[in-house]
Image (cartoon, rainbow, N blue to C red; front, side, top):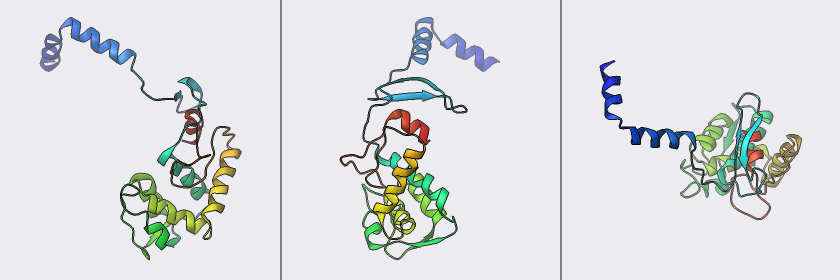
Length: 175
């Protein structure tokens, strides 16, 4: 109680009013955004929610969705030379080497938690039976099945290329 009283006494009125106003109306610097209810998925607010924009590493969310539907999490995957080539900054913080063997579960964790482009690429190669393009087509098929009208994948790691985009609304749906 004494601590709370001390904090209240230290808070002068103009400072408290400014803090309350800032908390009530945050500034948003994003080019597009959406706010949805986490339980129902209901759209609550947004700006330019359907604008097609580069999606960078959020691409890996769809990689994970497809992998979780199709793969055995304990299946072992060997990292290829091509995947390992992505194992250095700015593409990855995981540091995989050619021939490293990890489970699908470990590759998913490395891709999603550790900004691991190399892990995502190795996973996609394995689940695409050597064809990254085939897996990317499955990602686009999943986007279509989810009704995502403003999402298109061209690669599995989020490199900015023509015709790879998503919208804030679609990303909210994916997540």
